[in-house]
Each structure stands twice: as structure tokens, then as C-alpha cells.
Length: 548
Image 1: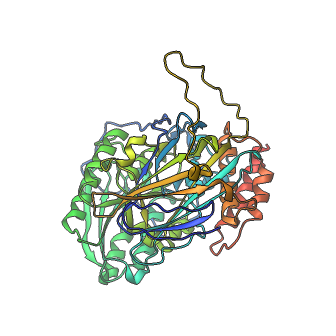
Image 2 (image 1 turned 180 degrees about the horizontal axis):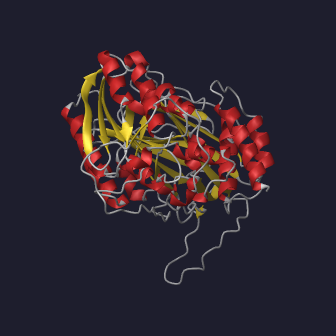
Image 3 (image 1 turned 90 degrees about the horizontal axis):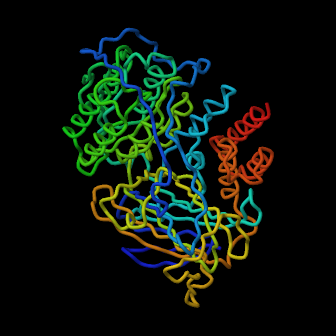
């Protein structure tokens, strides 16, 4: 069942379990969540004492793309610890609040491990980034004023037959390349010694050349590099002089230690100095994240980025390489910089991020997007948000415009999944003893018109250049749960199962590799870029590796 409506400011729109809602354009992506900081996270980056006073390269590399070499010993790679979201009772914790996340780095990094016949570390697997790697056939906004549309669907949970699965999907408004606002881009490129491998600096050069080839005469590019020190290789240059920009990329060399903080300072200063009001102002950081000179701690680097984000310059983080890849650091920088993180494991991924999804990578259409879901205790015994452990917010953060959240780019899709235990099903989560000093609360009897509602979704967001959020809410009815979900629903569920199996999740229940493969194969749907077919190959590889 579908329903469709538009809104200005806070206005309620009701719908059923499968529907589309269009929202008036006022802002950018945000997020929220009652789960709070349930995910204990840590990342280690070992600082070194040495420094360098110049960016003199030790090695010169051919910039042409090359095949990846066999995987280095992964012991030097670092990943933030993930504690999976558990089930929460709707009577005591009816609100789930989180920030949206358009990062996809985890999927391409997992692909890197599997194509090298190695299972990834558990903490390299972030379920929401696996699901969000794939485009879904969500309806686009019907007019130029709407930043995104919302699509939702509820059906059977494939890994637990007596549970339900709810899918919430956002689709960013698409912008044709000839309608993009003028861009002020700064390529911030790590040219330290750790970037010497063929799948690092040469791949950076190849990817950025593809991006430059698609930019227009109204776009500008500057190039900042950093190693032991930072330097401006190319001042902000109009893209009607592409030969000059491409030549500057071609002559980059690698060598020295890594003073990432100095490079970030110079890159943001360059972007601010060439700021285009009403345009796209963005720093694109290309690195393996191995910062070892200057500011090196994750906390201090994150604070630096948070301060710079106030300038109105957004940040995209592209990770490269293996062996010393610092995933946790790069993910945190992207979150604090009002941007997204991607991991580039080869030319195809560089093309996907920098060419096919150029609008989403460059143009932010909404920022600080927050989602808050309220579950009806008359219909829902308990629920679990799948993934987004590092994007959880407290309930009160939802209405706090000072609380940072996620961004969504033009054409991007974002998907969130909830596993739901209906009230008539027994759940084996431990209960709580009766309270001694206050009356034990029973599920609130909802008003008649609300008794059939399964949940209510609230969303807040800001326009890219606004500090004030707008919002809307809508309800999903329990009576319209579908028995046969769409291909998009089933494929997203298969990807989530895939991730839970890779993590050996305590919530994987009856999930199996055979079921993942069968479900994905039957829900390929329209797959023009072949991403879903490639997923099938990765699932088969993972099944074989897990069976060793």
C-alpha cells in the first residue's frame, strides 16, 4: 500500500506499512536515538616522534591504476569496537533516536578482505554501511523544493520467523550534473611514505583525475598535500584549465612522515579563502589515516574537524590501502566534518564514488538529519535497531539543534532496519523484577485511533546553510504488514544477514549463508551497475571461507 504527501514545517502525515512521503526542502541530514552511547568504541593510532620539514618525496610512482597486491598483515590496521544494539522493551524505552549515515566504507573494505580470501575482522563490519552501499528503488522527490523522500515497509524477518522487520528508506533529491551549483573543491592528499603502495597514491591520482574530467568551467580545484609538512601544490584553479589541474595531480610523489593536522588546517584555510556562497564548498581528504606527526590522537583530530566544520566547508574522507589502514579515525573525521566516508579498493569503486555518485559526494542537500522512532507498546513487545551503533543519540538530542547529526547528498539513499518482536510473541530477553517504591507501569492503553499503529517515525533536518531545523512525523499501521515484501526489502535483509554472519552476531538466529545467497539471488531486481550480482559472489566467497 502506498500513500504520498508533501509538507511545510511540522505537519502530521499518516500512512501504512508501505508508503512514500515527500518532505519540503529546508535542510540537511541529521540523526538521533534513545539508545544513547551504547556502543563502546575505541581506535588506536600509534604516534611517532619524528617530524619532517618538507614534503620531499622518496619515491615517484606511475599514476596509472594497478592491480592490488596480496594483503599485508592486517595487525597494523585499527577498527573501532562495536557493541551491537540489543532488544529494548517498548514499555520502558519506546523511543529510538539516531543520526543517518551515508558512509559505505565498511562494505568496500569487507570486499577487499573477501577478494583476498580472508574473512574481515568483526569490527570492520558495520551493518548499516553494508546495507547502504546499494542503491534502492525508492521514489525521488517530485519537485525541486523537497530534499528527500521517505519510504517504509514492514514484513517477515527472514532470520527469525516469528519476528517482523521494518525498513525505513530515504532518497535524496537528484540533481543533474548541469544543474549542480558551482564547486569550490580542495583535494587534500596524503603523500607520506605510508602512501607509497600501488593501491594508495597512484589510485588516488587515478580517481581524482576521473572526477576532474567531469567538473565544469564553473568549478574550481585546489590541491594541498601533506607529509612531514604541508604545502599548496595548486592554488584554487578554474576547471576551464583542466590540463593544469591534471598535471599537478600527475606529478605528486610519496615520502616522509604524516602531519595530517597541518594539511587539514591549510586545506580548510584554502577552501574558506575561495568560499562560494550558495555553492559546494568541500575538502576531499585522501589518505590511509596513518597520522603520526602533529596532532595524532583521534579525539584531538575530531575536535579540529568539528571546529573547521563551522566554517560551512564540508568534508569527504576517502580511505585507501591495506596493512595500516586506520578505519576508526577516518570514520570519525567524516562524521565530525559533515561529510561521508568511503573506502576505495580499486578503480571501479573510485568510479562509483567520484563519477557515478558525484552529485551525492559533492552536493549536500540536507544536514543534521535525525530520526526518532516511537514504538506502540500495544503492538510491539520489543525492538532492535540493526547497525548505527556509532550514530545513536539520546531522546532529548532529537530536538536539540546544537547536536550534530548526519548529512545526505543529492541522489543518495539511506536505509535503516528494525527487528521487531510483536506483543503476541514470547521474547527470551531477561525481564526486570517488580519495583518496590513505585507502581509498575503497564503498557499505556493507546487511544482508539492509535491502537492499530505499529510505530511513529519523526524526522528533523536542516537546510545546508541553516542553523534551524524543521521536521515532520508519520505513523505506520500494523494492519498493513506485507506478507510478500519487495525485492529491495528482501535484498537489504539479505545484506544485513550477511553482515551478522560475518560478525558472528548473537542476534543472527536462523541466518545461514545458503539462505543469504538464495534470498539475494531471488531479489536482484534491477541491477544496472552489477553491484547486487557482485554481492552474490562475495556471499559465496564468505560461505566457502567460513566453512574451512
